[in-house]
Length: 389
Image (cartoon, rainbow, N blue to C red; front, side):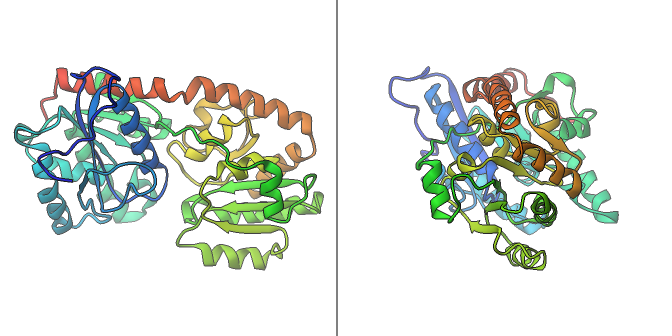
């Protein structure tokens, strides 16, 4: 990318040529945030927007185009933030500045806020997670102060879950807070359910649970494995496939061995199209301790797969236990196991919950409607930028 041409150009003949320009800025991401940014950028281009995408080198590999490298840090260290600022400044100031800057995450927002408002376009922040919620003691207090300061200074805020909305409700006026779910790409299955099962040595009639999750403490995979051990007492031929990888994989493998689940649970690692595994499952699971708007939930519902999930993020806003999913308390392995057994033993229940989940997905996760909602936020930010407090 060159600073003189920092944008992806809109699709030929599609959208309005004067729609505007936006720079998307994200930090390091291996999951849903970068997929959201890639899909949002593509759909904005279809609407005539010129879109730049900036972030750490290679962050968009495999999911979308990246037009600039900006080393948004994983830390809050001032030196790291200022280095990223120097990379960002030429992209958002001067005659080639975009109409609006859309930052994803608090660290990306902090980098952008180091550039004075008089020199840069209005700033829209999507809060995907609140980092202070994962800390304790003095670190939690300090990060809470940082979060509040960042949220107050941006022009508009997009929140993706009720918990995040509650945390920031007093930090921005109502007309500058917006509830908009992430735009998720529509995945297409690449192989049949039978082929997936065959690849793992799982028969067509064997009860199968699939979980798609990064191996990270947030996802509480030890709880999932504990629930599998409980389910196996009632469903002895149970099999599970865990799709994903991450820093805690060795610990997950050790827990699987400790629970004597080596022959029942496949740790599959990264898969190119996890919706294939979801489609092959009798039940899809999510065991997280916290989430914003989990991509795995949107993907599961979009194919009509029955879901067992903890009560996190947008789950409790859009789904109803026993109707469109089975929802259990965070960390409750026994309740999680009971919900799995409930569905594994009843094809009729699985079909009914999967069908209602699909109906929710069609109403809630429509990518065109969500993109239009983001555009409305951009328009509001461009029309009436805030005076910062």
